[in-house]
Structure formats: structure tokens, C-alpha cells
Length: 118
Image (cartoon, rainbow, N blue to C red; front, side, top):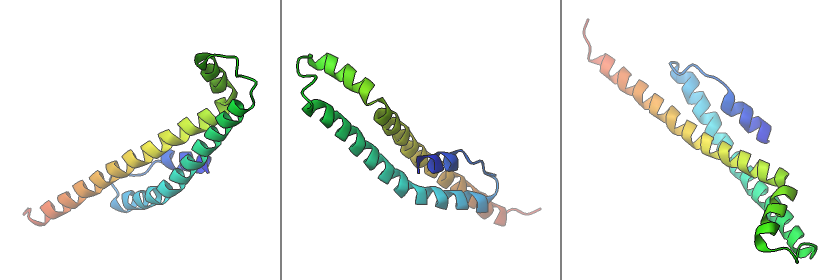
């Protein structure tokens, strides 16, 4: 799912074509729910990994700073996906706002063109 989200974010569109902008806006709005779900799963997996490391008892003799560094290394895959999907969620939100601004500008241009005489 994360790959699908990343591919969709990277997909280029013609920002001068209101139909393409609207289509992309709808696609991103739809993906926003999927991205939020992926974020929740990534957080759950990360927390589960850290909890399993804590309850193992193997690291009880280490101080908190050392445990944190060890856990970051042992949970590096979970941290990677957590960071990646957090960035995707933020990117989707920013992209949606950008596309809304483009559509608003295009709408304003269309309204202004009605009053122009040549």
C-alpha cells in the first residue's frame, strides 16, 4: 500500500488542465484514508516491536539512553516505515491544499474571463 501511495504522489499532472487537477484531487482525497490507515499500522508495529524488546528483560541492565539507541537500531525497519508514511500523509495533505488553490485560481480566471471584452 505504501508503494501505491508513493507512486500516486509522484505522478505528474497538467496543472493547467482543471479536469486533471480535479481528478488528482479526488485520487489524493481517496488515498488519504489509506495513508492514515497505513500510519496507524506502522505506529502499531513500531510500538509492538519496542514493547517486545522491553519485556524481554535482556536490556534491563542498560541505562535508558543506551536502551533507546539499541531499540532504534533493532526497530530500524519499523522506524523507517513509520517515518515514510508520516511524510506521505503530510505530502498528501499539502498536495490536496495546493490542488484546491489551483482549482480556486482557475475558477477565478474563468469568472474574470466572463467580464472581459475583446
